Image (cartoon, rainbow, N blue to C red; front, top):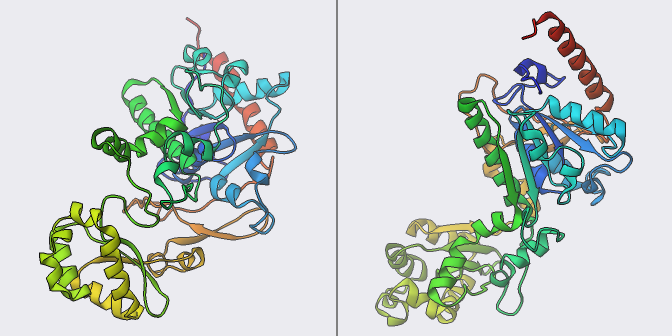
Length: 412
């Protein structure tokens, strides 16, 4: 039976602080979903020990070489972790893995179905011997059902969840430009782990958490599913527009700027007609009486808005939208996002270290105001196996300490 450790036992070597400082997370993770979940925990101060395959490591390390030779995905997902190379299938490596699990508060894995059980770290095997351990299993389709053993890449799950059918233009279905199925599964894993930690403070017992990418993305598909089930038709693919609101989407001005605007209610529609379109007569047009009518006559309405936008400069259109108090945005590219004035003014970018030198990234989006530790400190991205020796030495010292403590304690 594993013994609970004190928070000090799990502190990372760099003395990291934060709400989760002292929490030990062991993760057998690849690609995006599980690394995204554990990166959030690392940002809160948890000690995340990332188990990697000797020689090659996390397959995300090889996705590209755009960050001064490192993979952009890996840099994004693995900041603040300790990388340990272990051949978990070998007798010695498996013993080291089990020793790490003995010291863990949380075990995360997104291995192939059944792999964790074969390694002796499935929840069933650990439940009795590790009653305080929180296990989190992330998979494509879940631990049961006919899809259990299917490979589940992000695009495939987007397809299975129906997301492609409502994304894109009327002529062309499109995938979301980010790994959204992985990301939402990672976020549910993260929130599930935090929930289990809260529960453990009350009950003293761990939990088994299971998250599937299909079910996580399915939750995000909720509005579209209700709309289709009870409305009889699926939301239309409208490109950068909105399937059920009009006018809503991008419009190009005379000087080539793309302004994205959106209306939410009839008060805004009246203001839009009077101040932006300068067509008060449209308020009495039966085609546009309510939002449902405007959606039904989207083509005619969008034509009117496009004509107005094309007659104005970007500055002139923005001035009208501001006067009418209509929500709008500028359509930015990634480079423009990197230089977004709001992020700069709020000090949201920070430097962190990596094997290829200092890099810059966004600090975590949840700001804990009033924390004595101050703003979050971005910890380094690990080189493959960078912490193997240090972590295994910590394990040896922990075992020695446990034996010494056991020798001093009277036996029942």
